[in-house]
Image 1 (cartoon, one colour):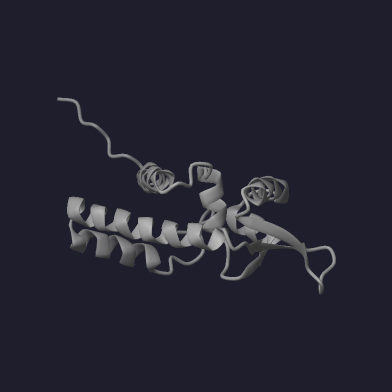
Image 2 (spheres, rainbow, N blue to C red):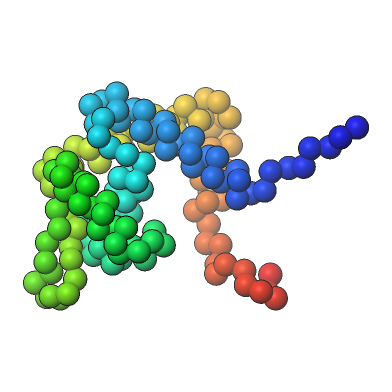
Length: 148
């Protein structure tokens, strides 16, 4: 008898994230946002309400500022975001949502609610609540060499 090992937690997280992302992209494309990509959604999900520094987005996402600027420029071409000079910090750029961007974010939030409801129907509302509670807990600093 061959025993199949359990998938590592990292693989399970990645699979779950892809399931949500594909569902979200599908719903947004059906609502007319056909130019939006996964990279766009990842960046939009890391914006603060109002304005955000491009450098803060890069740090939050663990990518280079150049990668953030490339994606912001794509979203700027779609009239979803714009870059502005920070009047207080001349070397910093602010990422600002445009009037066209706000409805996209509203639609994305509605679609995420639909996806969560679908998940609740498939695995049960209690399982979704437990998953949410586990992910919202403070896990503390990541374990390091020699520490648990």
